[in-house]
Length: 116
Image 1 (tube, rainbow, N blue to C red):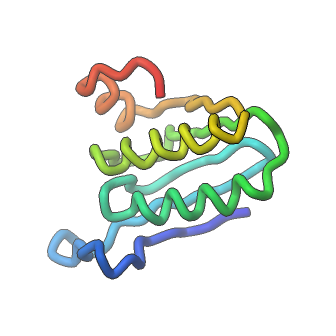
Image 2 (cartoon, helix red, strand yellow; image 1 turned 30 degrees about the vertical axis):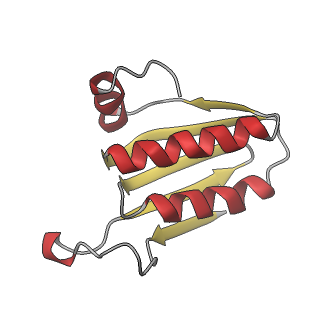
């Protein structure tokens, strides 16, 4: 399943002055979720909604998220990933980000977060 999920939430202002709204693409293959695009405060609600939909169709107890193709991640995007990780673990599953990707790796180091 592949979803392109720009944030359509009216509570989140569009980034038109910065070249248009951000979007994150979510592609599921079994228990492997691949993210690409921009994961920021604008696309975070769409990530959470899209991830929740995809997770409902995944029966594997191990969920791996590939963030290597994310070109940008900010604190809002990191917060969404943490929320998703908590949701997965609350359902009794294991959550892993691999590969992390350079955009997320930099943010994790800046925030001194070793593991989500």
